[in-house]
Length: 138
Image 1 (tube, rainbow, N blue to C red):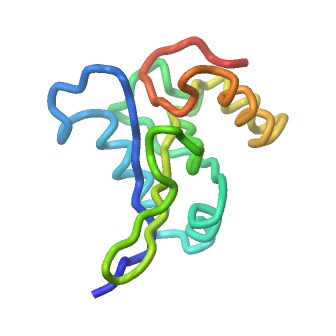
Image 2: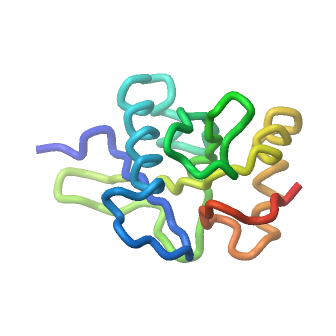
């Protein structure tokens, strides 16, 4: 028994999701998990702080797609609704929030850095929710 990598992904939305198992949100979580499993250098930042990445955008909402057909995400934002960690019998697990980025936000992140984009999200309410469509914060 173990806690695996000690990471649990969580995507929170206020949008209606009819079939969670077949939703774009579930597909996105699977793609992020596969990246974390396959790339050790991504796991440590996911365990300890904020991480940004892009994943394949196939079968994702068009509004989230970059020109290259990818979806940008920000992992590890604090949220008032969810704990940052929880304890299992075999150890601590970090609850890693997943925030989808609009293409303009991903461009802004690449130009100005995660901290500046995080600051903008923290000024919006609630900033950690993932949606297929919303106004970009930049």
